Amino acid sequence: MVSAIIVAAGKGIRMNDTTRKQYLDLAGRPIMAHSVMAFDACDLIDKIFLVIPKEDIEYCRKNILSVLELKNRVDLVLGGEQRHDSVYNGLQAIDKKTETVVVHDAVRPFIQPEEIKSCILGAREFGACITGIPASDTIKHVGKSGLIEKTLIRDNIWFAQTPQAFKHELIIRAHETARHDGYIGSDDSLLVERLGIDVKIIKGSKNNIKITVREDLVVARAIARLIL
Image (cartoon, rainbow, N blue to C red):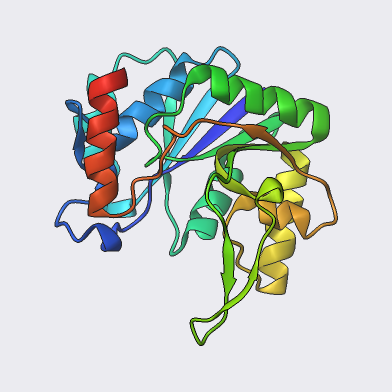
């Protein structure tokens, strides 16, 4: 069994809008709806858990999910204070029979079903697998003074994306260990890395952008006109 946790509990403060970023319009649908539909269209997904703010439960059920033609049931899960809390709440909600867990940021609306499938297959083979793209720009390591300390070898640098897929017991252990240690990681794969376990990265897409600030939404709407 494969369970997907789609995280849509963010406050969207950096978007500087009265509407949470996951509900903003993108090609006629809320941003998060595109992510939900992509996971629903992936034939390896058995269950979808959508993590949202507590106060938005009825809004999401009536105004978003009810108008989507989905083949899979979508269970709503209450979000936490921070992203790692929301993912953990999702992990607590999924079926114990789950073998593979896929975590995705709802505000990456251009993810494709075949990319989700490749990530799941990677997790089955390696235990942990994430999508990402190789760096195309020169990367500088900069100190607090604003001075460049060194130039990193670009060939070894990848930008991490979601989805990220893991064996169920592995991602549970990674999160529980981090919570015990009071550690907050920038993504879920980092929590697995802390256990000393290798994580496979596979090439994703440059279209799989994360919508965080207003400029991202402008880019997303341009991409949508080309591919949706």
